[in-house]
Image (cartoon, rainbow, N blue to C red):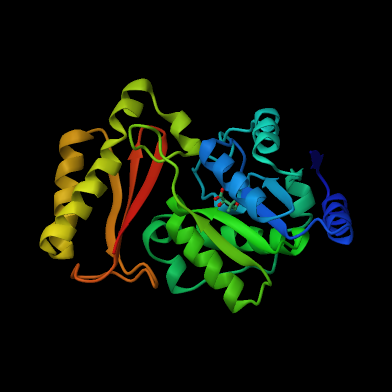
Length: 282
Ligand code: PAF
């Protein structure tokens, strides 16, 4: 497995792979600090594609002022070992200057889908995500790109961006990978202190309880939200709830009733970490 740091090199590697019949080209965009969830994305990509590129790039434009851009863990040596074990053929790990040689005047801004949930509390975040993912799609030129369902809103936005802007890439969304106690794997879990880490599975427990209530009783969305809030206040008192929302899984618009498929999504600040999770109830 090779590690490329320039656009020219990774484009050449992909062109060589195509020319020698090693496609389709799979792509897993990441910000590094990889965990087993990323490993699963790479494995899925390797099972479907002949040549898999993983990008490792902590993208400054998707972090807001006061967010953890500087502190975000950079662990390229360990990331490379994980990628190789999972079947990646190449890592693309560019510098910020390689991706943004000058201030970008052109950006990809997605309306509506990008303004709710995480977009409401992180203004500009999804413009940064879409812009860098669009650039990476143009650099790598993949046939298939793989995203995790933990970032449900991100996956929905990327899928819509690819459709609206005619990127010739299939967006594949893979299930959230969880720790044995239910906590969704995240690079930011490493910010948690041991007591915070022990308490954090309350997030997924509250989502599971809400899903059970919806399947059994179809309560109003407001009641589901209130029940999750109460459970978190009880089981995770240190947590500072950013949002708890029930939305349509397709357009991410708020729903009032639970008699059709619903996505329950939440974000909670716990110590230095901002944790997100979700569940879809069909
Ligand atoms: O999900 C992430 O790690 C990032 O948002 C992504 C898609 C790699 C873009 O920087």
